[in-house]
Image (cartoon, rainbow, N blue to C red; front, side):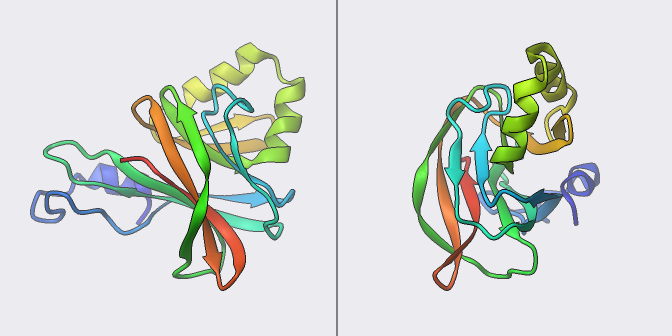
Length: 172
């Protein structure tokens, strides 16, 4: 199931007990040609980006987990994982990302190139048009994002054996 289908379904309390998380919900698949994934507040890119380098250039599946917390359903975690990898291990901490309202994951180099030539007002419009669970697109560079409270969040590497295969940011 994908993220929008899950929110449209409006699961009952019986389907998601207090304090539990959903399975991973698909958000978007992105191409990471540069081998560098960034976790960032897209409205502030590249300031504060946590970058994971050394990844194999490939498609990465961006997905989220939602947490049951009373009547609220906050996004608990967000990850980008190389397509075809299942059951990665969480590795070490890569850093902390500080955000004001949204967190996104993207190909660092692709977004850096796009934002170098895109006027700031168009960048801000792209982020605003993405809403709470959408995709900001800077030229040809997609940044799937989710709304979160302002804060600083830990970013971990994801491993398959000893190879880095993605990133995960813990949001609650």
